[in-house]
Length: 318
Picture (cartoon, rainbow, N blue to C red):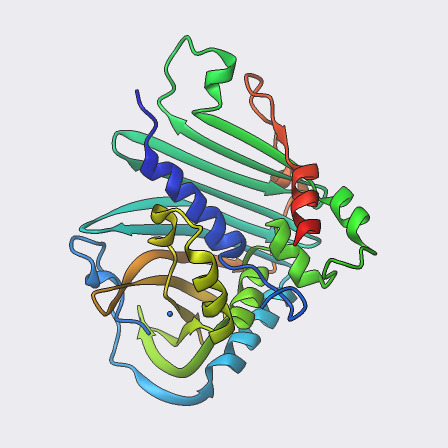
């Protein structure tokens, strides 16, 4: 059986979308308008029932910052996760769980089916080691050890060692949000910190989503970030450039400022259409979390790849 290339691309997008769709950068390091929910894509899941939107005087950038601060203040966040990836006239749905707890503990799981294969993604951090497990099945029998990596890949990153080595490195921005985003372990707080730096958010809309009052924020790339992208674009492979969002739309529960849905949008023929969507359901905030939930043990048939040194070298070259 051949590897499902679409699933591999999806894994790249999934990791990027939750653990940092865009890098958070300070000025020293370098310098998305939306339609209504999923019906813009043929045969996509029907959206939640909503009422017409009205404008509000709230500033989008300020509201996004409020959402970020609320996420940072939570002792724990647990939610069921639904991710929809839109590809031309079809879509792929993934389901999993998002779990976050202080200090720096994170767990993200997702499973999806596509083209006769099943993809599974697990990312777990216990505040010391960040594990990433990507798997595509069914796995043929009789594979040699070197062939298993085509179907299962496990990496580990020593977060504690990285933080210790770069703590006083003069070339690296040591701000906590920058590091959490670069490390790929910041979860939703780092994602929203990243969005606030890299995107401009304007007018806020108010919408009733499944009878829940919501704010809807739409962001597009800042001019500096767009210019940086144009410079890099020539060196990117075509399949990656087509998966870069042009805008982002965030649906926020007015009652607790939790982001119920994050929709990434692509530009096609002058229109903004869904690219992929993260929906958080059954959200529970501030509940006790057993530390054992952040324990990961790799399969005995796989030798994990340690990416700690590779990450440090890349970080120091920036």
